[in-house]
Length: 352
Ligand SMILES: Nc1ncnc2c1ncn2[C@@H]1O[C@H](COP(=O)(O)OP(=O)(O)OP(=O)(O)O)[C@@H](O)[C@H]1O
Ligand SMILES: [Mg+2]
Image 1 (cartoon, rainbow, N blue to C red):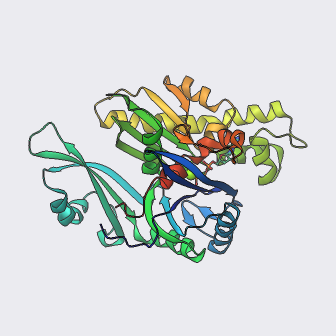
Image 2 (image 1 turned 135 degrees about the horizontal axis):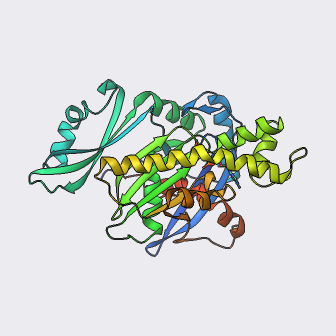
Image 3 (image 1 turned 120 degrees about the vertical axis):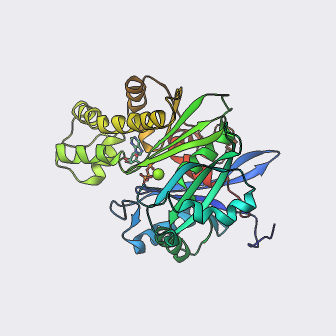
């Protein structure tokens, strides 16, 4: 394959609505080692509903992150999420080669994409033959060009070269793949609870078979705390993360938080149920929880209770060597938040 970019190195950049995260990995004897990691918190309202509202401040934050993390390469893999801009559908098509599908995908996609087909970038992955002879399953991905442009422009303005634009749910899947053993025949729900988005990626035999994004996240917990104690965003964030804040008793804060979890729990179980009803009631055996939501006190436990499923907290560094130069305690603590960035860091410049 033609190398379009001079260097083989790249890093993963997760542009979340509340944190930017950067991860660079180094390949080492068939495995991976963490080379660089850092994250910076964003002020609220820079990114709303997946759309970049304040690109100037976002560019500044990106530059700060690159500088602080000491990232030398310019090549970066980013991702986009959100049900308003990303369509991911598993579709059934007559069997054909990858080249044939590349030719016809636009035409095939038209009926599944609720936007003008000229306004989206289309990608696909052949998942394999179906039970019916002559048919195959294909994962279709359509992302609105204007949202890609928004993100790509900001990244370029920060002096970087975007080489891959992925979607959050698939980046999650990548991170899962390098870190976890495939559980044959079992459906595993990868659930990433961010500040304003929940990504669900249902994986079976190591392959993504269903994804869904919801526009709700841990920010509703922050907002509930702000409202209850009449405090600004900043202290509410700290309170949510377990710090003490003047004028807010920890027990009272905890109670408010647990009440606000309800909507998140409902949304996650609803998404999983939606998967089940559209696939003939496939069993879902476990949830691997990532994102900042995984760090909310007792949230994983309450999700297990609500869903009746086994819930574990994602460790995207499970199979990645973390050298001593890193603050390992810190990395371990925030690991679930790094899942998407790790998945992006695994992508290579000459990937499709
Ligand atoms: N230690 C912690 N304890 C509790 N909540 C936390 C902790 N750290 C972060 N959070 C919460 O998690 C959220 C951030 O998670 P994450 O970084 O996964 O989101 P994001 O990627 O920025 O957002 P999104 O993907 O939704 O745009 C914030 O709402 C924050 O309050
Ligand atoms: Mg996120």
